Length: 172
Image 1 (cartoon, one colour):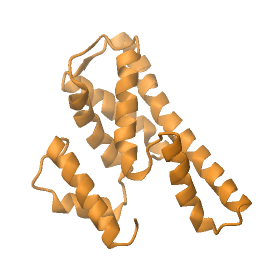
Image 2 (spheres, helix red, strand yellow):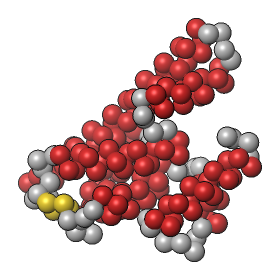
Image 3 (tube, helix red, strand yellow):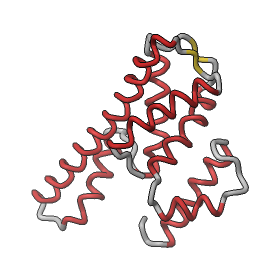
Image 4 (cartoon, one colour):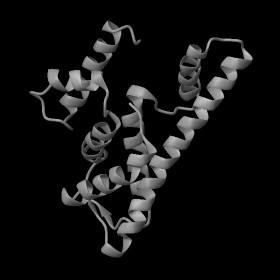
């Protein structure tokens, strides 16, 4: 799963709108641009860090005389060391970062939901925008279409099916 810079503004609006429409957060109209900037900053920092990890992994692979294909494995190791979510961990990582930002910003008047409820509203938006053109994502969604997206059962089953398909296709 990959977060593309060009989609950030769309994702920001959709996340903030979803949280407000479901009455999970209260934001004064005057503070709405600031809340959107807060959410945007989290997503932009994720993209920046992801690029930095890619560059560092490529450099390390070159220094060690490793094949170019090894940089992904090195990048994964760097991400784990820094507790940064990549691939399957990207959405939970970003959702947690966004929740922390919403809890600590002075621009949100009130949060009416528990973390798991916020996560259930945020994760599907991220997944929809980050999974574009991912054939595994499409296949997993077909297989679990009987479950309601955003629920805990859906999230668990999605992860299980995704891991299983990646293993079958030799991606893990």
